[in-house]
Amino acid sequence: MTPQSRAYLFAAITVLFWSTVATAFKFGLRFLDIFQLLFYACLTSAVVLSTVVAMQGKVHALFGVFKTHWKLTLIASVLNPFAYYLVLFEAYDRLPAQIAQPINYTWAITLAFMATVFLKQKLLKRDLIAAGVCYAGVVLIVTGGRPEIIQEVDLIGVGLALGSTLIWASYWIINVRDPRDPVIAMCLNFLLALVPTGLVCAVFSDFAAPLQGLAAAVYAGLFEMSLAFLCWSYALRLSENTARVSNLIFLSPFLSLFFINQLLGESIYASTYIGLVVIIVGLFIQQRGRPTAALN
Image 1 (cartoon, one colour):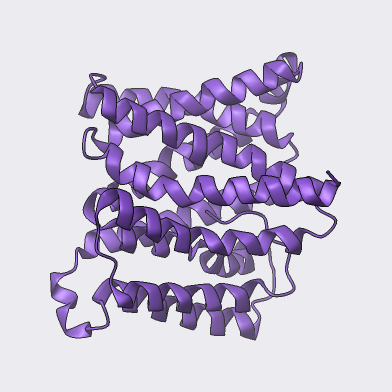
Image 2: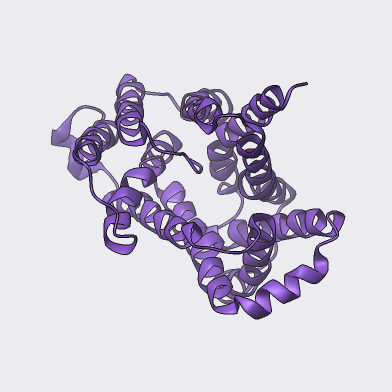
């Protein structure tokens, strides 16, 4: 296979992974609370990433990188995975998957606004247009196209879903200037996050978990937090043009709705499909001409 063909393969695998995790989140939350799901998913990811680092012969580098960049590592690990997934899981616990998942895709819009403050990047006219389009899609999905029923919506859940985009965008602001090797950085983030995730699980819950819940947590740790990251990194590295593979990621939310319907049994409303299309259009407007890091 040519490098570009392999790039498409890794990108397609990533799209498939990310298309199933919303279903895995909701399935896991049927058997676990958010603290248990967070801890076991992070534990799984830490084991996988540590194994990858060991296979690459870079275990010694973990200690050196942490010693040199311990402040950055601590901040990054608190943002992702600890705070991001804690907030995101609570949003999924409160909302139908077909609402929580599309809202999560608007993080790129949040990033554009935050970059103007923290990275001194210019806010373009298309960023404002894209934001208006994306959030119109969010309103359509949340209200089902009927604004008068807004009082029936779990606004706390919606606020948490939007809040997760703020945390994820903050993580990518830091990531822009992160000098650490990406795989080592992610491995350190998850290893350190085991401390706060374990503490909140011990204080607010317990570690007793049924097999079905553990399976969902392991799945999330594998296919949302670790393997998807590695596959996406390889796809971008192998591709001759990142735009060729980055646009494939916009297939993920539509495939996700299929799995949500077929595996969770949620009836997908027409307003969800329309709202998601509106969000994707907004993201295309915002991303046009810019390199894409990751969307999930």
